[in-house]
Length: 312
Length: 267
Image 1 (cartoon, rainbow over the protein chains, first blue to last red):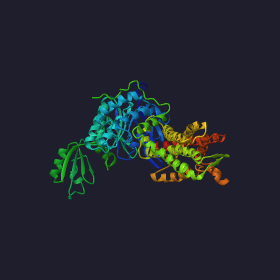
Image 2 (cartoon, chains in turn purple, green):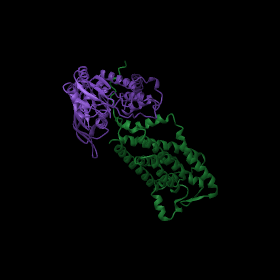
Image 3 (cartoon, chains in turn brown, orange):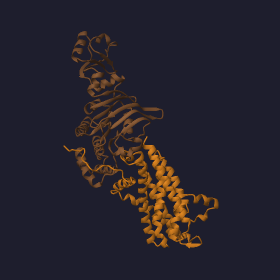
Image 4 (cartoon, rainbow over the protein chains, first blue to last red):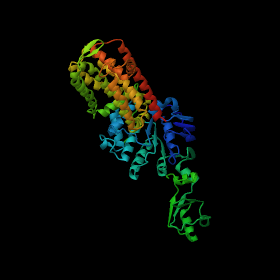
C-alpha cells in the first residue's frame, strides 16, 4: 500500500473525549502499525468504545491529536471511513434485508459496483460459513451468526484496518471460538486489527500488543507476555475457603509468595513456583477448601494495576 | 481456506456523487418484496372521493370557484390528490423514525462514506417517490372518472412531486425530534386539521377573512390550491407562490433533518 513511509496507521497524542462533565477518554497516547493486532483491554466504562468511535470518525475528538492514515478525522472523515472495516459493539445489521443483501448494500455504501459485490458477498459468506443462510432474514440468526455476518460486512470494502469493538461479547464459548478463528485467519493474511475487549483470553489469543485501559487512561502497554512479566508473577495459587478464612494472611504466607490479593470469593497468591508455595502452606497447617495452581493471565495484570477485576 | 483480504484490487472504494441515491437503493431492495404495502395509502383518498365527491356531492350541488361553477366531485378531487401526495410523503417518515431510533440502519450507514446529509436527502427522495406512486395512481383514477377539466392537469403530477417534497422534508425533520411512538399522536393532531381545514372540501371563502389568512399560511392549502388550479384550468401567478412555499419547506426540512441526524448519531 502506498503513502506509508513507516508512519503509523493510527496515531494519537493526548486524545480526549468528554461528554459534558464526564471524561470518557483522558489524554491517551498510542500508535498502531500496519499488520499488527493491537488491543484495548479494560472493563466496561474504561473509554474503549469512545476511542474506537473517534477513530471510526463517528464521534468528534474533544481535544488532542488523532491521525488515521495520516488524515484528520475532523476534515477527512469520509476518506478515512472508506478505508476502515468497522465491527461495532452492538450489531447494526439491516433487519429489513436478507443476509446476502446486507453485504451487497453495505458495499454499495462504499460506492462499489453492484456487479463485483455479488461475487464478493458470496466469498465473504463462505469465509464466515453463512452460505446456507444467504437468503434468510437476519433476525432469526443466532448471536454468533450475526456477529460473523457483521465481520463479513466489515470486510466488504477490503479495509486496511479492522476496528472490532468487543467482537465476542455476549457469545457462548463455542461461537466465540469460531469468531476468534476467523479473526486469527485475517490476522495471518496481514489484515491490521484494532480491537477492544474485556476478556483477557481474547486479548491473549489475538493481540500482538495491547494497552490496559482504566477510567479513560492507559495504565500499561506491551505484549501479553511482557505485561504478565512486568506486572505479575509466573504462577498464581488460588485459595477458596468455606467459613474458616483467616483474617491475616501475612502470618501464613510470609516468605512464601511475593504478593497476596484478597478478593471476596477467593485469595490469590502470586509466586513463580505455585507448587512450592502451596506445599509450604500445607506444611504451615493452612487448610483451604480448594487450592488451584495456574499460570498468570492478563486478568492478574489488571487486578494488580487497578485493584479491580476486569469483569465485575 | 478463502483468501479474503486484498481481493478487491483495483476496486478502490469511492464516495458516491449523490450519496442519497444509495439510501433510495436500499429502500427499493426492502420494498421489492413488500411492494403491496405501497398500495395501502392509495385507497384512503379514493374512499374519501367516493364518500364525499360522489356520495355527499349528489346533495351538495355545484361549487362556485373564482366565479366559475364546478361539480362538487370536480372541486374535491384535486384536494384529495394533494392529500394523497402529502400522506405518501409524510407517512414514510414513520419508517425513518424506526430506522433512526430502533433499526440502527443509519448507524451502520454512517460508519461508511455515507454522511448524515446523504441520509436526509436519500430518505426525502424516497418519500417523494412514494408520494408520486400514490398520486399517479389517484390521478389516473380521477382522470378516468372525467374529473380533470383542463390540459393543465398534465402538470398535476409534477405538482404532486413538489407537494411530496415539501411534506417529506418537513416530516423527516419532525420525526428526528420524536422520542417514542407516543409522540406520533401529535402528528395526528397536526395532520387531521390540515386535511380537513385546508380548503380541501370547500372553498376558502367559507371562512371569515381573519381565518382565511391563517389557512393560507398552512402548507396543505398551497398544495390544494396548486393542484386544483391545474385540474380545473384556473391557473394564475398564485401557483408560483404555491410552488415556492412548498419547495422552501422541502429544502429547509431536509437541511434540518441532516443536521439533526448528525447531532443524534455522531456524538
